[in-house]
Length: 138
Image 1 (tube, one colour):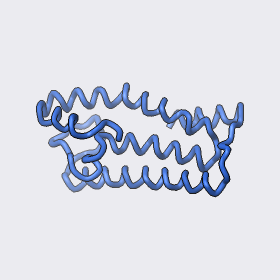
Image 2: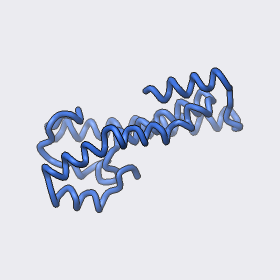
Image 3: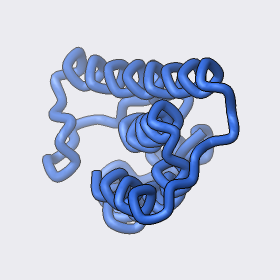
């Protein structure tokens, strides 16, 4: 992820460490990274069980609304940000964690808006109802 590399570059130029005890940083970092992995694995498992392709540029035969998709419409994108935040905490590099909003903003503008438009065209009211029930992120 480009924002992780950018975060470490910024950290290298101006090191700014989290003012937390190492044990707390490691614990929170591992919690975020574990949550990210669980989200991504859960989403990929649902794709596999429903016979769909997780690649967002491929056609979608159905909307998945169960499992992690009952809580967030974008578990894999959410996982990317959580993983980045966890890496920032584990490494102590504040810049890496502070760039998570940039990561999510970039994903939203470059991928999610296009995916949502496609799903609205393809599934109409069923997708609009899903959007009303389930938040984009959390």
